[in-house]
Length: 154
Length: 481
Image 1 (cartoon, rainbow over the protein chains, first blue to last red):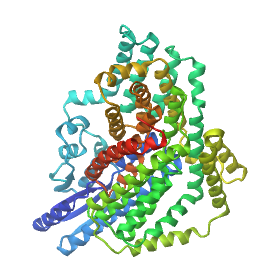
Image 2: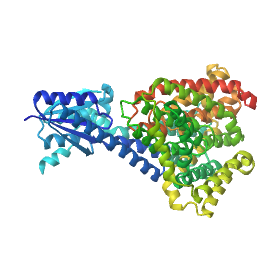
Image 3: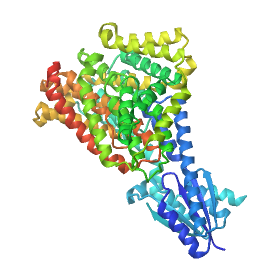
Image 4: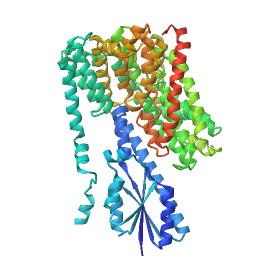
């Protein structure tokens, strides 16, 4: 049986990618592994700025970060539940998983663990210059993934 | 084993030259800044500038670059300024360090501690919920409440503290209505209303944003003039009310609500109020002390001193054991003291060595502008600069130059102070423009393009409203340009 991994993250949940991943898995009669990566780098960057620019104290900063983290978990859980429900409705075997960490590392880890044949991801559009100067996690993921990759531009 | 180790290796697939360049960029940047500093100091002294002024200019330029680029934390750049000024002979070291003891710094410290006490005791949440539940009649009313309540609260405590305090409440509202990120326009309007309310309200008094007392400190250090607590409010509140109205209609226009029934949100607010129970004695006393402090700032602030009132209120909180030192340490970021002390010293340094006048003469004064054009340029610069850099940095950079230019155009320095300080608090466009925006963005419900779209219109509206108010209303208060 073919294994397909759908990797989602907080700022790039991509409903189109979800629908396509389920459709692709149904056509290929594949098993779908939907993983939601809670990428803390984005929120950490925001809270660094809050401390530096907003001079927010340690406790309100920590409370705010906890509230945001809880919100990201809730959003991830809801999204994964919807993926599962939609996959079940279309008769696609599906496993869901929530992990925390760097999006590229965690996606590769899940791909390796399930010996995936296809990885489906969503990428936010960035300018060429921006990608060249700052690098792109997605570019690295595309280069490093040991399987076929389908990328959806958000 | 080997596999898991390999998985942790990050491969940067960009061309080697780009990788080396990007990783050495920080070092190159500091070398370039040091060379620029040396170049400015070593150039033949320009006409109209003294050698001391030339050194002050070099420190000003380096501080400006560091504040804008944020290569160093803002507070550390301020420390650089306060050390560089006496080391380069621009200012006596006793004078430079004494500016850390400026009244504005102690007022800001007192205001932050009072806000910390209100947040810690739960008084701020109670007040927010008390007023918010009065806006539970419908979706539009709730948005109005989410705009007005933080605006009103940011009159009396720092806007970022208001935004942080309100965030969990807005999240609960969103959850109760089962709104989804990327799908709900109403959710976007909820988070944007709370952020914009805090931002706009934060310019109304000295308590909403620490840049306001900083601006007064620079005004006082450079001209000897000042603006009182009530005088500031009377001048700025009409602008605040108009901007809140514009923000409300823009939010409703751009994010048309997909829901009408918000009864579940109202139930959540009711439940949270019940959860809080009756106000504790501690909350009542903190509220009373805060109320007395506000009345004193308004009525006798000019004679007694704003900082004296703030610090007395703080002492009273400790006398009645309403807060502990640990609470204050947890809730106040002491970097703020370094930031403001350094900014005041730099402002004083560039004004006392005539650098501000020289820069003004070399730029705006040579452009044959009218006072109205100068004001519009300053207001627009403050608003758009603050989208990218800290509002404190905007005040520290622009105000000494603005006050100097104002003298040549016959503009009241108080008007120029308001023209820099108020717009520099109005960042609507970018998540990193101000903490309130960053908090709203961190919800995951708002995209950058949402903020840019509505934020740009609000920026332009703010410039127009500010200039019209300054031209039409301020002369009635004796503030002319």
